[in-house]
Image (tube, rainbow, N blue to C red; front, side, top):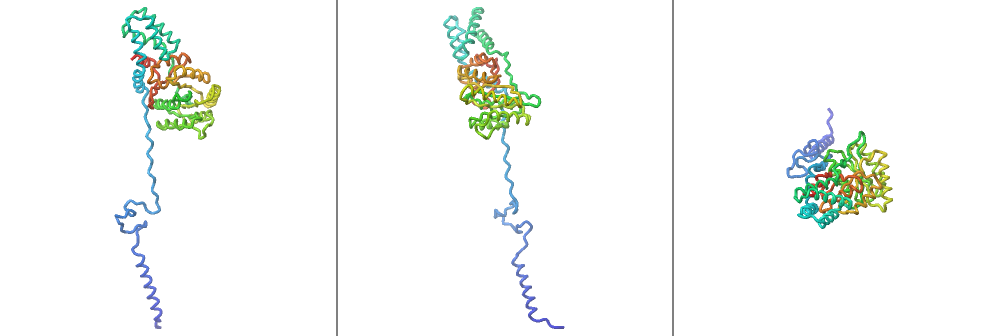
Length: 377
């Protein structure tokens, strides 16, 4: 057998030593996943629960916005009735004090007439009420406070006219939602009233959608959307300031049809330069909307503190569109309860809603008997 050269043994020895060196350099085998077999519990990078390399941490889920639950119409009316009684006590108590005197002469009747006029009852209604009271005092000949109060209540209630239909047309009609246009000049709380009305309807379990057709006031759409978001009501608006209001209103009604809403409330602009512009814009909005669905209500928002100026505004709007109802805001803090009678007589349409404060649920259906009782409480 031929002997192996010494050089071959040397080469084999070098290869074996090299392989052993590589094994020693690599160290112990790491477990699957890339972590060493022993973790340092004080090392935050290697602390238990860490994500493995190559995985991404899921972002925490944002909690769903908490929706407000508006007050029911019944509870808010009870609360507002007390507030109305306090704010109008001068009116009611003044009349009762005058009518309860032992002797009611012409001077007393003049004071009664002045009190009624200061309460914005209007000239015709004041004359009618004073004459009716004079007849009854002569015939019944009493100054008993309870009897006088009952007598005054009956005459005031007759003027407020409980026979007027004050219901809101907000019921869905087959495949179409009810459509309500809300109109009025700037400063009367029109956009706020739309937001509060949405709360009234949500409390009645109506599915509501808002249309921000006041495109000339930059903050109007944002304000309306905020009101809606608080009770889970969507708002249709334009991203372009000064966009065509009629187009936005039509888009809102179309969205209401598509989403099967019960009611679409459309807020309109109040800042217009002249009467002709007002009539043209409101007329156009109504015509364009009616291509999609009929307009069921046109509610005029008036500020109760403006008195006879509010009467002028009411007549201008009544010429522009067919008003179906009045929303009387800011009735709190004044003795101007007679404006209800004056407006109804002037326009021939009922006051349907009243606002008595700044709170989100300070808007309620108008109830004639509760209103008169609050005046005389």
